Length: 257
View 1: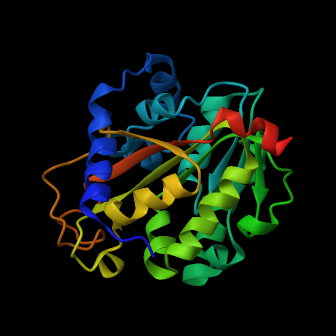
View 2: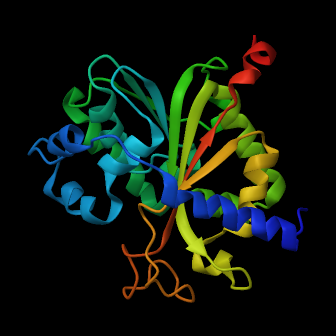
């Protein structure tokens, strides 16, 4: 288990501080596409808090890419990615069978309704666990997982969290990116109960898994109350969120080949 040493805490703070130096390309075109009536009014209503155009730009996701929405749930980000990569790209919407059975099949019904009638033709459903996607190593330009990693890190432990990261990295091309979004949690709080992620323990795992980590402040909200569970109506949809760009180093190309 990684200990949150003083040096390690300083490293975490340094990574988060880098957020101030990130310059984003123009997001106007994607924002316009995301605002079109083709997306549901309910989906578009979440854009103000989730800032999808800015997030996609920060992660470097572009038209023509092959990407994956990890633990896609009902597919809100699946649709965002579908629009971002366009007709020449591919989006894999991955959901473990356990997720699809959760809440009496709530997410199964939601993702089925979203993709009904082939309305997102560049999306491929993968109703499989991460270890059984069937995709060859190095096949993805990017992946994203939104508000999921805390469940692995808190509920299954650091070994499982590292295994998740390593498995995703294997699917990425050298230079590929994993975008990780999660509710910020402060050290010392019961973040398992609060459904939040403690960066001081999670970030070292990401670096130990071999990723280069850069943070963005796009989704930060210093007015969040870190003692409240994320589903509390006082903070729901308004939590302080980590947005991390985890890059697979280019020098791993020789190893993967």
